[in-house]
Image (cartoon, rainbow, N blue to C red; front, side):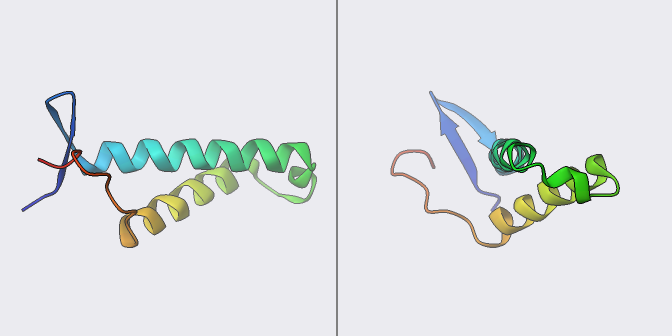
Length: 73
């Protein structure tokens, strides 16, 4: 059975929820790296950002966070 999240009675698949969470975390990491001027040392910033996003999404998928009570049906 594929796990689903329930938001206001609407069932949402796991993939978009984890992708959105990974995107938010990757965006925060991107802002931090811009603030410390890390991208001066990166050859291709867009490729680096994509790799960070995929890595975070993989970690969230492989090691899921505990789901608060009531989000799963």
